[in-house]
Image 1 (spheres, rainbow, N blue to C red):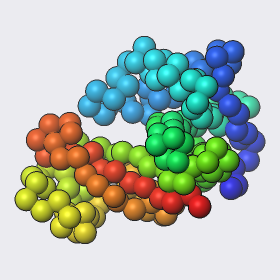
Image 2: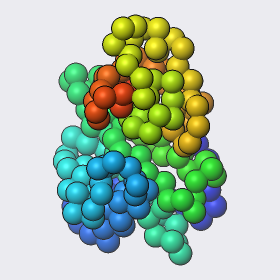
Image 3: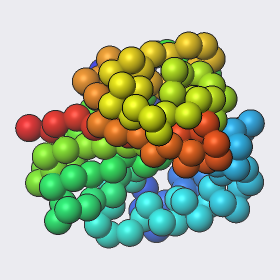
Length: 189
């Protein structure tokens, strides 16, 4: 894992109030324009507060001049064997520099240290950026997964594929007709 120059990773804690606020602001800014996801600062603050639970992982990337430029969270399930990556946000000014990859690899390491075997995440397609968005996938969900491609826009699927994730399922119409949640997972060990 190689971090961009001058960026360091740190845990979010209940005492790290400035970093917590920075993470909330980043989350709100990173998802601006998405339908409903962290549409306001208070909903982002609530997500940060939830991430501080003792059984969770919550890490930020800090740049000395820009402050919080990345945030990743993880929460355990299945007795800690499976971890959900939630959320991941990187400041626009720091995208495409390896920071997202570094955050995910850091989460993978920490989840493994806590007994994790699998890491998973959900990524919605509300804008028709993939072959499963804007269509009815109920007739052939396995076929929709096999034929999955990104089409346009900035859907993060290709990013997750490069990190070794695979599609393991779909929740059709999770966000309305033709707006599925796509489930990705990878083995940690």
